[in-house]
Image (tube, rainbow, N blue to C red):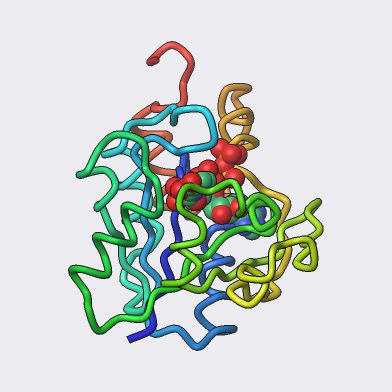
Length: 197
Ligand SMILES: Nc1ncnc2c1ncn2[C@@H]1O[C@H](COP(=O)(O)OP(=O)(O)OP(=O)(O)O)[C@@H](O)[C@H]1O
Ligand SMILES: O=C(O)c1ccc[n+]([C@@H]2O[C@H](COP(=O)([O-])O)[C@@H](O)[C@H]2O)c1
């Protein structure tokens, strides 16, 4: 089975993530995409919402799509979520699966900075999906990575979790930027309201 791992902080999950996953699923004929919230992301600020909350929002966004599922492996492991540790664990657990890792175009140019990138490039293929404002320079990557990065197009949406958190903090609507059920969850739980943190 061909599985695309969609790793992220998902603070919160938004339609850019869903469109990227769908584009990778279709563009690379994957069987499934597994959405995997990180515990502590390696290269950025710690998440605002807790792991359980981010996982719940991802579960709501994935819904009943039979090709999508959620994976709590990094939240369960704790600590900093290095992809190399995760992929080693997944390959040991699912010996028959072929793994792909889906990333936004903004991340492709920084792949060389990932922990254990040479080992990662041996055991999986990265799928880079277009993201507004990012130019993918595959030719700047070392040879061993160029052949392990596949690019797919997606309908471009200039949305980030940062924008969404800022909009919420300013009391603005994020309707249609996130799945309706995620929007309801955010409103009901108040997780991004400044006074609850
Ligand atoms: N609008 C988008 N289009 C394409 N890919 C995206 C988009 N938003 C996020 N991604 C990709 O999804 C993955 C997970 O992203 P992440 O959870 O960090 O969201 P983010 O919106 O970039 O968050 P933040 O604004 O908090 O940094 C990353 O590979 C990222 O590049
Ligand atoms: O392992 C690494 O060195 C590494 C460095 C940067 C990002 N990642 C992974 O890439 C995914 C997207 O990262 P982010 O920061 O956009 O949430 C997420 O699963 C991270 O754990 C992994």
